[in-house]
Length: 171
Ligand SMILES: CC(C)(COP(=O)(O)OP(=O)(O)OC[C@H]1O[C@@H](n2cnc3c(N)ncnc32)[C@H](O)[C@@H]1OP(=O)(O)O)[C@@H](O)C(=O)NCCC(=O)NCCS
Image (cartoon, rainbow, N blue to C red):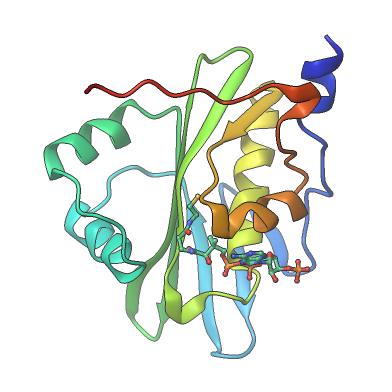
């Protein structure tokens, strides 16, 4: 049990720029004077999502599979930038879950034009808060090597008690 207790170290749930308004949460990005909001609505233009993933250089995935992954995820969070009357997808993450104990976070991405402004942290804190609200206490993810420290700052730990993530791939 110690493993599960220590697996995830909670972090403060609110950043200074985060506030709650009904079901949506707003971050005001002072620098570019744009408004960014979170949504858990999974009615997403998958081609817009693909553009976002392209922007960070991720390999393309078949749209029909992405559609299924979005539909079957436990939680889907999008971030939208509002500038004037234009809205664009600038962030995305999703989590799969057994709906009771465990959730795994996937596809965390912030558009390069808005990176390093605290939005990735806000997105992850939002997801963590939503999952905790669903009484899920074990939150896992697979970090690319260059973002391990990003997740570490959010309270995630590597190999707790020597536990190793293991993978099986088809030949
Ligand atoms: C990783 C990513 C989501 C971070 O989003 P972001 O909005 O740029 O990050 P933030 O500005 O919220 O940074 C939050 C903190 O993490 C740090 N941080 C951000 N990216 C980091 C990185 N790659 N390595 C180490 N620390 C990082 C910031 O310095 C900041 O630290 P602070 O709280 O002490 O000020 C974003 O860079 C991204 O989309 N990258 C491409 C896709 C990707 O690699 N996704 C992860 C797949 S596992």
